[in-house]
Image (tube, rainbow, N blue to C red; front, side, top):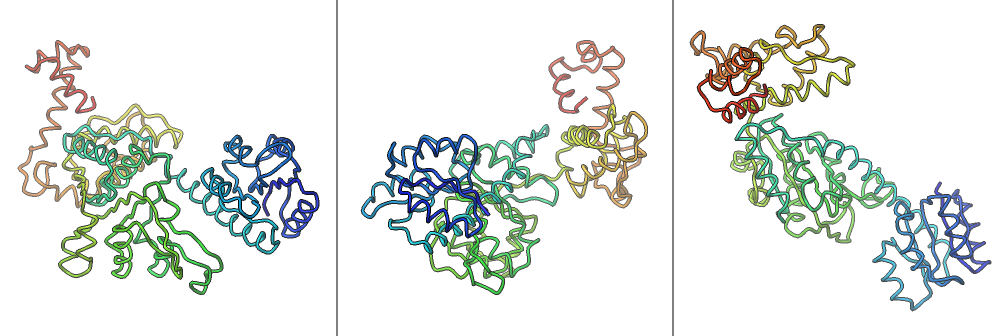
Length: 452
């Protein structure tokens, strides 16, 4: 059931349309003039507005243009007399979804109303999805390490460019989805939809419909037409997560979309044109998949226009502690706790662990520690790390196999010495720099880099 604003000055037509709409279960706000319609809008936000153009106190399109903000969430349909082509064109430009020619056929009206309300419902679903995803768009990107700073700089340049296809590569958990959202948020498309589809999480038989949409009757359960992600994301950004999981037949259809920005719904004959930025994400080796004939070479070269590879966390050690502290701040608030930070032993443990699960694993470790820790500081004992990874840590990341006893990463030693110098001088940076034999600017750089 929908709330419909009906604006029509002909009494008999207005009455008959109201009766027909109410029989369909809708609530109708009836208005015979623009002044009365304005009064309704001051009290209600209708799901739909059915608007006549020629009214006693003005033109319906002037009213529409004046009240676009109040009708922003409404589907607008206009009723035009035969021959009012210019009015119909103007209505479409203002954002009207469709128009009816007078005299109005009741069956055509109900079909159009139902179809329009379905489209509105799909739009609202897309807006909700976008809202949920964009809650994290304003998160700060933590990039203290030169490697990741460079990655963010490249992402920012891509965001501001007209590149319509981006490929994000890297191990699982390195932050590819965060960079994808960052690209969208810093682009000219930021106020348009940001939608993502996990190609590995949706069954093959449903994925095509999820991406391209379907027409009513296209398959057994297709009881109504449904736009897909590409259609709903028009003007914005669509993230294709785990693109390496796409089957070959869908890869061909995706290639056609990328090359022409045109596609058809499942079971449809009408071509739909969209303006999209596609961000493809994978942790798989697509080149190896191409050699194995598991991924189309033409699609690979099409999505590989602008590849960005994210470094693993073990190669961006300067970011480990800032990330851990950022997670601690957000997670402790949720848990209703308040920690002063990590103990020095815990920090050294975080710095020496190889992080095979990357940033995602680091967050999980911090979350477990927040639950377990009873003291004001997160201790080393509260960090539940994979012992097998500790034993097999590569050289430079800790005292693992093949690493002489007593050897620890230089970053740990550097942090320890800076911390000791600051403690010994009562946090006097000038004096601490003298003790360390470096300049004050060099010390301040290390304090920031090491997040002391």
